[in-house]
Image (tube, rainbow, N blue to C red; front, side, top):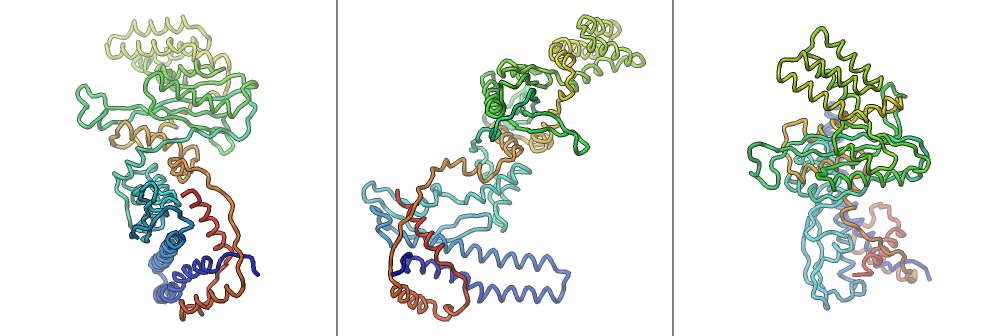
Length: 500
């Protein structure tokens, strides 16, 4: 006696694989030979050769995938013990789009004798949603392109063949996305200081809640927020690079939503760093209220005004002074670095006294209010003299958000802007798009283990002879097959259908 699986199961699977490979050997190989002969006549036609090889190989792959799925469906049809309580209704032809191309195959509709439920058991085994039209890998390819360019190009990128998905379908999939929280470090680090930069982008909306609801005065922008945590700055490659970056963001509107965002950031910090060792967390930003609120929600955090914005306001308040502009700026900077708020206020009053044009006066008043209103944030970096406190948020906003969402004349829905900003952040955190697609489905772990079946060598020979009669001349064509993987496949299928 030989310990293995029943030949009519394993051998049938080998037979199925032989069909597509044999067909390729009898037809596909000849086609490849013709492609290479044509190339030998004109060796400049590299593209035609590569495209021809790709087409032939893709066709083989699609045929093998179809046979793989039909094999499992056939098993379910022919083994009542594997589908107890389910009766065959009919067999349908269907097509699934994969990243390789469209796979057309047959699957069987069953009816549950107790619940009267109708279902394709193969879909249940494969965890396919009802009316699914594409596989996870195709969805991942769509997201990989849509996050970079457009919904239309995302649809075109679904498979390597010319089978595009409509931009409306891509948009709907992105609108339904849910995202996991930013993954913390595997092991907590011990650092004295951490740095947080925060800013937002201005994205144009096509409508607020529904089409046509934007009226004058136009308030047609939404501002996705961006926060990133990092450990410091390095200059090893000749330019500043942030160490240990982790990104957060999306469209968070209202105090509660902003608090939720900051809480998510703090959860990450607590999970990734030893907060007992941590002495201070610097929050760098332009002074917006939502950014300042972070210091109230994150333990040991202090707000620091972004020096870029401080310089911008000082230049704006003095540029109209012509020859005396440089002197006025120097006075403001002396007051800042000397930590003398009253002196800075006095300089702005002197500038106002010599400014007659109303528009310029408004600019000076705005600068005065900005500098004095953010004085505590300015003093934080003046006192600490920490060279690591340098905000680069505007550059990150441009790279992460604006490149895709606001640098071109695009119009977004509020939901679309939120989902795309989160998708861009997910990508920036080196998130895997296939993992994201699977995250949507919340799959449960499958059961493990398999049973062994004992049968005789005589039975194996009988089944082999039957297979040879069925294959005919194809049986003598060399083919590599390993029975053991087929045994494992049957065992695994039994595990998948255990709960059906």
